[in-house]
Every structure is written in structure tokens, then in C-alpha cells.
Figure (cartoon, rainbow, N blue to C red):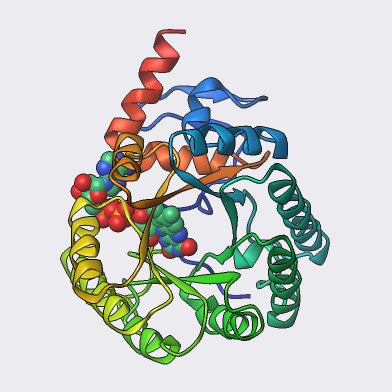
Length: 311
Ligand code: FAD
């Protein structure tokens, strides 16, 4: 079994405890139920709370990408259970006619167990998404899983070209080649900077270099793909660049941001007519995700500390 690089700021794989310590403090909280402060980043524990969140967010003109929290299963049972939970979620989105889709992590549907199990589960989910006319994204995790993830995406995209999209990471040196290979593969592509702390041999470690690769990736996608580009970033510079490139190449695009991050900007862009999607995680495994959001940015930690102190 290989050791996994820690996620830098997207998921919570580094942390799996029952307690949470606020950054920079000795404070340890015992948490049994989801507290109001976590609700900024997590759309509750149940499908119903996630769907209610989607309804309210849709009312603001922002569409929603729902992600059931869970990852790195080394037993097929929870991987199968999460695949079933996504199928239930797809039915529920279809029934409530929400402007919502889903995003699935490879390691939550079996990639750590076997590539075949993952590919089978992904195909079942995407087939079900297609039947319900709901879109399904596949997240990208650490670089040990990139090949198997892209292989499974290609297979699904050939079968269900309008129902599936794949995330790729600009911090990986291989990504420019991957984008060139994916150019004729149907489906959408979400470009992110990359949240996993990879080795220097395979990844850019310098933020300026990651940003440069992100700009180059956007330029390539807007020039070469005609199925829409998803800009998975909170970075105002990248969002402005996407707007320019869309004008230059007449390519549709969407902006995707996380729940609880720059939500004013999400609503503002939507008001200007940009297609904005908010990635909203939910489920009972919310603690490590919430902890990650607090650690990534001083403002988030201060927000949590203020909420705790004001009771
Ligand atoms: P950064 O490069 O971190 O920051 C650039 C600028 O953006 C900042 O200077 C600031 O102006 C603004 N900004 C950034 N964060 C904040 C904040 N919290 N509050 C206010 N302003 C902020 N990673 C993966 O590896 N795999 C995935 O599948 C994946 N999926 C993602 C899906 C979505 C919808 C999003 C938004 C991110 C996803 N990521 C994923 C995470 C991604 O790789 C980055 O780690 C993360 O988005 C930070 O990069 P950034 O481009 O948003 O901004």
C-alpha cells in the first residue's frame, strides 16, 4: 500500500480525529453534532439538509455541486454504500428538480481497493446520472490515482458524453499532456490548481509556477475544447482570465467555488450572468473537512473563533 500525500487544502485526509483544535490555540472541542459554525462550509449531515441548502442557493442564482463526504476506503462495503448513497442522491435531485449535480471522490468509491471496482462504481453512478438528467463530476485525488481516474473517466465519457466531467490539477507536470490527450474525449473538464502535496519530481511546488500552469491550462481548454470549461478556483485573476478567453474563443464556461468561500462573489458573478456552481459537501464525516477549511486561511479561523466566543 502506498503512502498518500496529504491534501493541502481541499479535503481533510490528514485529519481524522474526534476532536478539533482551532488553529493557533490550545482549545479542544468535543463535537457530537454539527455545530452552527461548521454550517458555513458543510450543507448538513443528511440528504434532506443538502437538498434544502441547494434550494436556498439556487434561489440566489447559484447552482450546486453536492459531494457526500467520505474517502480512502480500503474495504469494498463502504465504497459500495457511498455509491448507493450517490444513486439515492441523484434520484432525489431529479425528484426535486434542483439546479444541482454531484461530485464524487475516486477513493470513496473504491480506487484504493482496485481500479476495476472504482471504474464499475463510477460507471453505475454516471449511468444513473444520465437517466436522471443530472450531471456527475469526478474529483481528482493524489497523483497515484491519476491514470486510473482518467481511464475510468474516458470510458464513462464515451458512453455518456453529456453527463460526466473530470477534474484535473495544474500543479501536476503531466497535466498539459493529459489535457492534450483529453482534447477529443467528450465530457467536461474542471481545472483546479491541485490540493495534494505531491513530490517535486512530478509536481510544481512554487505557487507562481502552479498559477502559470493554471493560466496555460485555461488558455488551452478555451482554445481547444468546445464542450465547456469549468474554472474550479476562487482566484479573481483566473476568473477574469476565463471571462476574456470565453469572449475570444466563444467557448462556454462555468465558475465553481466551494461553499463558504467568497459567497458574495459567487452571487455577484451569477447576477452578472456567469454560470456559477457552488461545491457543497454534506454528510456525517464533516469534521475533518471543516477542520481543513479552518486551517487553510486565517480569516476562516477567526470566523470560527468569534462564533465560539460569542456563544
Ligand atoms: P488560491 O490559489 O489558493 O488563492 C488565489 C486567490 O484566490 C487568493 O489570493 C484570494 O484572492 C482568492 N481566495 C482563495 N481562497 C480564498 C478564500 N478561502 N477566501 C477568500 N479568497 C480566497 N483540488 C483537487 O486536488 N482535486 C479536486 O477534485 C478539486 N476540486 C475542487 C472543486 C472546486 C469547486 C474548487 C473550488 C476547488 C477544488 N479543488 C480540488 C481545490 C483546488 O485544487 C485548490 O486547492 C483550491 O481551490 C485553492 O486554489 P484557488 O485557485 O481557489 O485559490
